[in-house]
Each structure stands twice: as C-alpha cells, then as structure tokens.
Amino acid sequence: VENFDAYTSGTLGNVPCYSILNYGYGSNTTYPYVSTTQGIDGANSKALAFLCRGTSQYELAILPEFSSFDGKSIVFNVKDAGSFNYNTTSTEYGGVLEVGVISDPANQSTFSALATFSNMDYTWRELTVDLSAYTGTGRHIAFRCHNTVANSNGTLYVDNIVVLESPTCSRLAGISVDGITSDEAVVHIADTSEEGGTYIVTLTSEDDTLVFDGIGDTVY
Image (cartoon, rainbow, N blue to C red; front, side):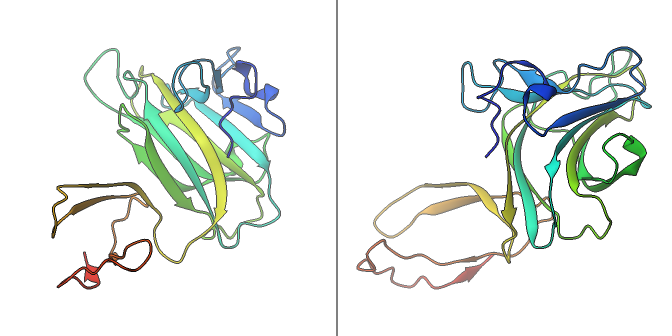
C-alpha cells in the first residue's frame, strides 16, 4: 500500500518511480504533490494532493511501470478538501478525477481513462477501478484531475493506493453492523465499484458453533 507517509512533503518526485505531468499550467508545475497533514491515517499523515482547475488544464500523477494489467484492479481512497469542484464565479460544479493508463508519461494526450469520478465526498471514501479492461500498450497507471467549469479549482486528496488481483465480484468496503439483538442484526455494505451489483450475504460464526435459525444466503 502506498500511503506516502515515508516521504518528505512537496514534489511527487520524492516518491521513487512516481512522476507528475502538467498540461496547460504554464510555469506552475508543482501539482500533484505530497501533502503534509491530509492523509487518511490522521494528524501528520500524508496524501497525494491535486489542485483541479480549468477546462484545459490537466495534472497527472503517474505510477511505476507494470508489465501487465490482466486480472488486476487499483484500490484507493479519495477525499474532497471542501472546496473541490467550486467555481469562484458561480455555484457550478465541474471537478473530475479520472483513473486510467498512460502510454507515454511525457504526453498527457496518450492517457486513456478507465473510470471517472466527480462530486466526491468531504470524508475519505474507498474506490476500486478494474484495470483488466484496458487493451492498449500503456504500462503506467495514472490519476488525472481537471475541471469541466472555467475559473474553477479546489484541492482533492488521494491516499492508500494499492494494485491487487481483481476479485470475481465487486470489492466491498465500509462494512458495519448495528441493531444487534439475540435474533437480528443490520449489516451495512458500501459498493466501491460505482456500478451497483448483487451480493450474496452468508451469516456464520467464527467457530461455526452459532446457529442462525431462519437465515440463509440472501441476495440483495
């Protein structure tokens, strides 16, 4: 898991094998960068920070090279800083974070988006993108941030990035249980695939000694 905590704050060049690419920013080439205090693990933990601005300005965080994306997915956490998507001249929202693959790390036009996210939450949220759908020749995963509304900007944070073998079903996160009684419980599940889906929930005890009368595999 890459959580950026081991590196000094500032340019993403401090992180081995990572690189940044800006397009349309003129002399300002510092974004994305490693933020000092905004990580998911609390005070003084770090995260990757984007300043998403303008309709023709792009900033990319490019990950190390992979030999193949077959059967793989990328899992990461994302948070809106509170001003993300905000247009300084209106109430429109247009910030976009794309996850995809770039074939030439020096040319943002070779970026191919596999998933697009907007209207992110102000609290950390785990998301998953299936990489196996990519059929091109690129070998670098990249996060690309921009805005669909002119004169708009704001900060977005990404943390705890990991590339995994893709499961046969959507990865689950935010699992919690409440309303527990002797014969009832409410299970909450967050779908991180952004596509919805069907889940089979099976209730068992850790040592298989607890019997759940009247409860079988339930499809939601």
